[in-house]
Length: 433
Ligand SMILES: Cc1ncc(COP(=O)(O)O)c(C=O)c1O
Image 1: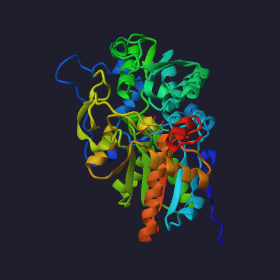
Image 2 (image 1 turned 120 degrees about the vertical axis):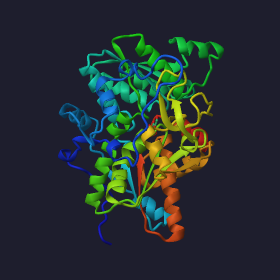
Image 3 (image 1 turned 90 degrees about the horizontal axis):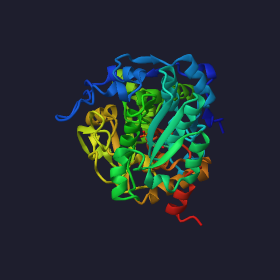
Image 4 (image 1 turned 30 degrees about the vertical axis):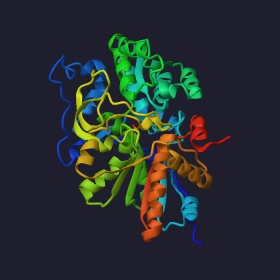
């Protein structure tokens, strides 16, 4: 039998030294953020909320943005470039004619892709003279990533963590604390806004929208602190394009190219980071690619309404044109809680509106998704984060469709993180003893 490589590495010198900004390549202009009709201007307040460099990147029309050399070194330290695997064992088990490839964001010091933007935001914060970072987190992966990046940059970090998840991920909380972060279950009595919800119900499960409001309020009150967001915004997706840019080089080395590109989607950062460099090929080179975002029925934001809405619960952000379920909607907690956000990034929402992104939403009991993750760990050996299990499930479902049709599709999927600190979630859903 001819030798078939199971993984493709890149040389350190092949690490991308620029991020890809899709804004100038979008088929129609990206609708800008807007102020609501009433109240103070949120847009004028943006320089108080976002890092100056990130704000510049947010509205940049430059297709390529340099990654500073010092930051490239931090990417090396965090294990980049990461391998692209060919899922030969899984293909065999599924008896599919499809070729499956997965990107290994699980090889991250904190467990997920979130370090790719955390490193950038902490680096810019240090350069701009801040001493403390504040943020929200859902799955806990973003909070851990920012705590890690803050520690490396010698900055303090405060994390507001959606209570429904905070309460079952004690190990991850301790990991953030080991990095030196202060962690609060959200809604918390620590902020004025959090206090109003906390006093109504001290067991309030929280949401990403609420935790964002708390992180922003905290930073607003402290001139030495700046708020950092782990998803949704243009510059966050752009930092994440390092994933897809590496993957494209790896496909070249495999001498292959994907027909289908899949990832899970909460606010959109890992999907965007993985998919947008391929979207460039569709928009500019006429490539035919099907993009599928894997979501939960608890928060199928891509099936919501495409309209202007706030990114947070307390309406402190400008309004963004996005697919949204409504910024104050209540959504049932799931184990893949990083997917439980009311809105999708404006860039991906626009592409969805242009019918360039498909979506599938899996049932809230997560049984199907976690069973698929079990098939994956038993063939490929890696334990996906609960969120990443949605990407795995979607890839396997597509591969099984190929088995029926006989199509030899090439399916690329991103595994945004590992699930080593999420075993209690697997235990509950799969009834493990
Ligand atoms: C491992 C992992 N994957 C995916 C997500 C979803 O976020 P995004 O859509 O921004 O990638 C999260 C969010 O916390 C996560 O922790």
